[in-house]
Structures are given as structure tokens and as C-alpha cells.
Image (cartoon, rainbow, N blue to C red; front, side, top):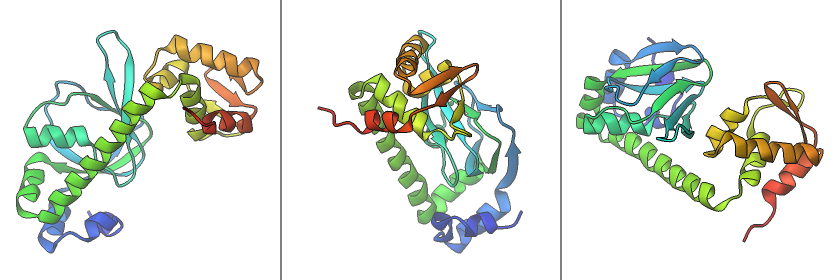
Length: 222
């Protein structure tokens, strides 16, 4: 495998020569199809992935059966739960699903441990990503507690890529993103539809008034 993926990543560029050599020698480039389950709770962790393109959705299923999206791993990012499992030699505590087709470079656990031992730059890269993701998760928890569901729903709809203003999604998927129940999302969407902001379609939502959604998203909150 060529080392272009190392040279194109600013964080990896700064690694020492030995660390780059280990990465070039040990990492395997893989194409992962959309919908592939990469790991489940209880699975042992054998690899450390660098996502080059695409999106991996990391989620948990609560005891009540509610699916909650914790975060997504996108281009040039790593997964903190995978890091935690490797460092602690513990099993995965969540599920990882390829949300799109994904290209990733996969590093075996033993070579990950080797890099953590010999390369201060690699350790800094791993723990910097860990710290930033933890901060993002704390912000997400605060948002779930403090921001009304209809505001978070407006923000999520505006953030999703839409072709001709139509978003292909389900109420269950939106509920998982917002850490709430499908029925709650359904009521909020019907409210948006009654106001003329969206149109609900089979398997999707069509945005009719982006300005109204943006005004709700950006309105001052106490």
C-alpha cells in the first residue's frame, strides 16, 4: 500500500520516521460497504481503524430498546471507543455501522500497541483525538438535556445533505440521532408540516422553508 494516506493527513505527516514505517508496513487498506456492522457490544477489539473517507455511525441500544447515536467517525478521524477498548484490553461497548461506503486503513492491535510504546507523536495523535471526542460528547449531552427536541430536529434536518430539498431518512433514524423516541420526532415533524416548513413523504422529509427552520435553530435560548 502506498503511503499517500499518511502524507495527506496533517497529523500523520508530523510522525517520526519509525512510526510512519510501522504504519506503511502494517496497515491494510479496506473498502467497507454501507450497512456493514464493524463491531458490536461484547466483541473483542483486534484493529485500530483510520477512516480515509465515508462515515461510521457509533451507537448504543439502551435497556428500553432506544437506539442512540453517540457520534460519527469521518474522514481522517479515529474511534474513541475503539481506542478505549484497545488501551484497556476490553471488549467493545457499542455498535459501529458503516453509514456510507467507507475506505479505511486498518492497523492490527499488536502494531497499535507497538506504536503507542515507541512513538510519542502517535500517542499524542491518539489521545488528542480522544480528548476532542470526549469534549464533543459532553457538548452533546448538554444539548440533549438543555435544547428542546424541535430545535435539535430543525438543526439536524438543515445539517443533512438534501437533493432537491428532500432528505432520505426515517423517523427512527432521526430519533436515534436526537436521543429521543420516534413518537416525539413524529409529533415534531407533524408540527413542522402543519406550519408549512416541511412535507413528510414515504421514507423521507422534504424541506419547504429552510429560513423558518434556521430561525428556530438560531433563536436565542434562555
